[in-house]
Length: 396
Image 1 (cartoon, helix red, strand yellow):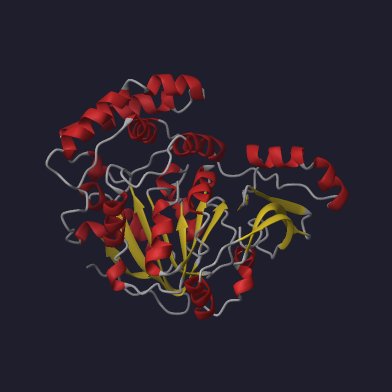
Image 2 (cartoon, one colour):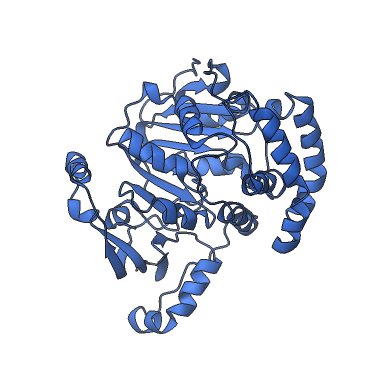
């Protein structure tokens, strides 16, 4: 992590400031363009010139530390394997330099440990490849996300953006570079390690392991916040949504994309998969990892065949290898929680949180390269207002 990120973080428990203690660092190679961009943003170049690979973020009020492991700050409020390994590895140093400090030991939200394990397996078995990303080429997915986020209607240059649930980080990295914005990406899972490994050379992309229920940022920190296909994989989509609604500044915008009932009913094949999922996913999600992999293996050839048929004569799709097929199978069959919602339900959440000027992806005309699954889901964006009455929602 760059020192710049420490300025953006607070303790997710008491929302107070943190102290950065650096144990191991390495220099960051900045280009002349990077330096000019940092100065244009009104920030000190020194905040970006060094990456902290190991250290801690301290909350002296609670005597709590958050470790920086492999360059990523671990800001979860409950115990995790990465924090336990860090604590054991540096036990003597922690005892000598930080007596009385310990990692946080809150309960966390129901099922968060299971969600962390499930999506860690999914993403850590999936290496970055520009040729195939969620059934499209990476370039086509970037274009589809630009449509979903309505980027033509926004100027995010030099703005501070947050993505909640970055997965392997390809979308966040692309947006940071193409829009020239500073982007923070959080994820509950160890996908953050894959994201850091692949995109650590981007000085304007900051990666944090954190939960949507307890995000480690002050209220009103960001100009734009978005979450694509993530919140419905928690025990309560609405509660996870409420966890991030105070993060945009007054006048800033929030976009969330969630599964919908409509999307699962739009083709006979999807209706069959939806019915089978209801039976098998509760079983698969609880299997030990080696057994789960064996159980999922028979699905991979079916995903490969389906994607091959979809890609024939259609540039919108790309074919799957075994890796992409197993990734798709894990995403369908192994999450502990998968909720589906409607535009009306989620719009009510936005309005209750003080958001107006709502727009709906389902009511927009999509270019040919945007998969139908994007517009058949719930995709809503709103503008936050903390000082004035909320206007009636409008659609585009």
